[in-house]
Amino acid sequence: MTDKASQHHRPLGWTHAASGMIDAIGGTPLIRLRRASEETGCDIYGKAEFMNPGGSVKDRAALAIIQDAFAKGLLKPGGTVVEGTAGNTGIGLTLVAQALGCKATIVVPETQSREKLDFLRMIGADLRLVPAKPYRDPGNYVHFSRRLAEETGAFWANQFDNTANREGHRTTTAVEIWEQTQGKVDAFTCACGTGGTLAGIALGLRDQAQIAGKTAPRIVLADPEGSGLYGWVKENDLSIAGGSITEGIGQSRVTANLDGCAPDDAERIPDAEALEHVFALTADEGISLGGSSGINIASAVRTARKLGPGHTIVTILCDGGSRYQSKLFNPEFLRAKNLPVPHWLA
Ligand code: PMP
Image (cartoon, rainbow, N blue to C red; front, top):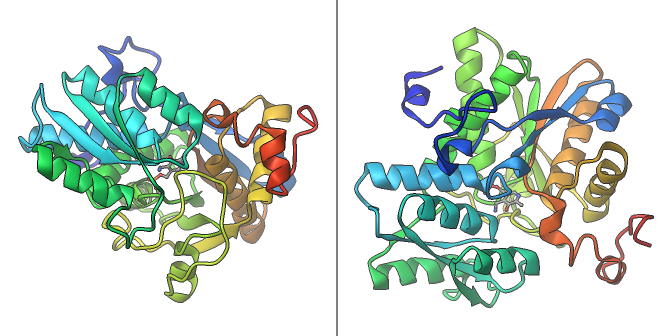
């Protein structure tokens, strides 16, 4: 472990009692995905981030950002954190804030799933819904949240450009993946919203490989249609084509979290391909996931095929299916979008 890593939160895992909710974040299982592994002759593993207390990978970013703000004196007990989010960061921030005596105001585009919005209301977030607008529009949820924080003197989490986000993954998620695979990771792939997960894990795996005197794993971006990052990796061009029903991923700019961490390769995954993985994992392996996890698994399978048998590929299982009952598991919604319907719901 690097000096940097040792200064940061280390999850206790399941062999110890956690001293509170904060200590229960991270330390998630690494699960072998059976069919993906068998079909490719590789070991494909998913890091079960849906098992975090707030139900997603974003609990880690929420904790890292709030701990960093406490350390810098930007946030204190009794204070308020404000953020614009697709929902999962808002859930993580609200729970972590409340565990540390703070409050959260969460700005979400109204297109996000009903389940995430209901959950935010249920846990007591001060929820502000705004119309979905592109980043260049001043009404975009990110800009709205920045202005709200400025006007109210609250702390703005700024998950896209606050690199405490990726540092959280660098010092926890990456270290856990390295330990859980005993340092055998040939490739890591995942999608980007802020890029904190991809860049933080890329940096952390590079740290670990360097300490062990090994070659750093190949880093592959998993991108949905409608995101600019695939073009950025492949042709240094952020232009966008198509669209996706997945939530929380896709990006039209190089965020501060992604800056300096360009992946080695990228896969652009259509929704139908991602959903086939989500539905097959539910039916055959008992793992219920959201759409971004499907994008990640599809990219891991493509990466395994490119590398050939005998390799170890790790990806992220970002959140669970229950967050998307009204969309990904709703036959009418799927049919309207011309997407596959799982046989048990048809
Ligand atoms: N999947 C889901 C479901 C998410 O909510 C997010 C974050 N918005 C991501 C993936 C992407 O994570 P990151 O922001 O670290 O790139």
